[in-house]
Amino acid sequence: MQNLNLDGKRRAVFPGSFDPITRGHENILRRAAGLFDEVVVAIGINHDKKSMFPLEQRMAWCEATFADLPNVTVASFEGLTAHFCAEVHANWLIRGVRNGGDFEYERTIAQMTKYLDDELETMILFTDPEHAPISSSVVRDIVHHGGDVARFVPDAVDLRDSKNG
Image 1 (tube, helix red, strand yellow):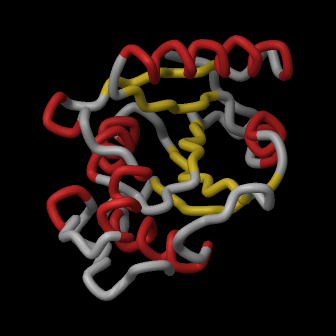
Image 2 (cartoon, helix red, strand yellow; image 1 turned 180 degrees about the vertical axis):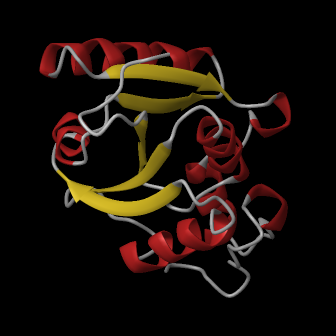
């Protein structure tokens, strides 16, 4: 896996809304961190989509979750992921997949990303099976209805008192 950027590093971006970050996200990122010199957790800002949790909170959760990994940083971005990758000089895009539906969606995104930047490679990692049923949308629904999500989110995420961010 060469594909080095201008400063000789294998830098990857792991984009998402992380609203909230889940154990599945954590599983993918921890494995990716061992494959690259640097990984940027990139929290996308989409003004057309209402987030349950504020950007600052999502960034803090990600920073706390990966504080033990010196090659992981957290940033936010607006616009196209491919453009953000170019900004941070990343040649790799990390995407996580839980099931066949995710795979079809991510394949389409990866192919479109190639049209936008033919030097940007997408690496799809499958989450470990125990995390496959976990999604941010399901976690948000459980939180909204007052359920306990502690086993679905990293230890740094405490949602017991959160209902709507």
